[in-house]
Length: 61
Image (cartoon, rainbow, N blue to C red; front, side, top):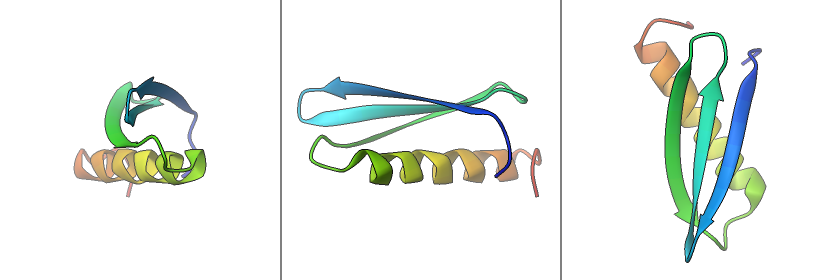
């Protein structure tokens, strides 16, 4: 996906909340994962979720 995306990682005890925000469409999604997961895995999961939502809304193909 070649779009400007902001990611935010918020530790919350035993899990981490990850928010992904697409600047162009102003679409935001959040996921939660265990705090033991790597940042890369959490980032990939958030990006997959964002891509799914953007496709569902017809913003990307």
